[in-house]
Image: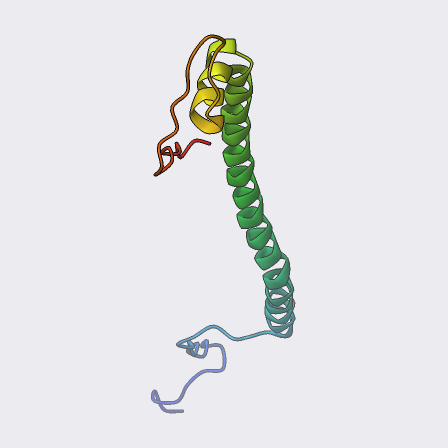
Length: 114
């Protein structure tokens, strides 16, 4: 025999692939993850919409609380006899006992608060 012939016991050189093989399990896993991701889009969108709606409701509730506080202050102010007398004189043109009221031909100016 010649020295150029190969012996049967010599291992064959291993072929290396440039990219990994896509197995059946990996393909099934990829499909399952894709489906789950697609199914998660709608609930995530609803969650974000509801979060924005809750933020708007909270903002509106804070505005209404502020308005309520202002109205409560005005109610307590209107219970003051001095304020009632001021409004009666300005808005209704009333005078106190013993006072003389003069009416001009062009009328009286009306306060914007009346």
